[in-house]
Image (cartoon, rainbow, N blue to C red; front, side, top):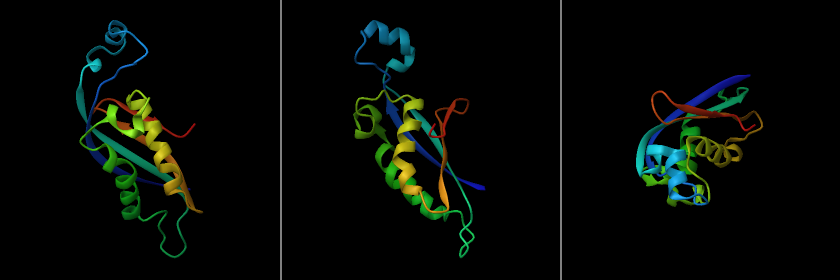
Length: 134
């Protein structure tokens, strides 16, 4: 089994808020993140598979780049995440974003020889979430 990874960057803003809670509880729960703010995110999409006999690629990284752009970056880059369809009725925490991105990508990258292995989403240089579809 081989693993290939494509790393991309995007910038988005959000506000962490649970609409079912009071403003006071949201402030207690989310602190400064309850205010409108933004991040410069990095996403790493890792595929697991075996090389194709003709190309020796697990997947052409140009194709993986295209899929990531179409399914994620075109929808979230320079957007207010709370207002986009992908996060309708979902608090756009880094955890929920990673799960949503997995759902957007899993079927699009699936091939006979390859599948999605993980989505890593870096919110800051020091904080990231990794989701493996579990």
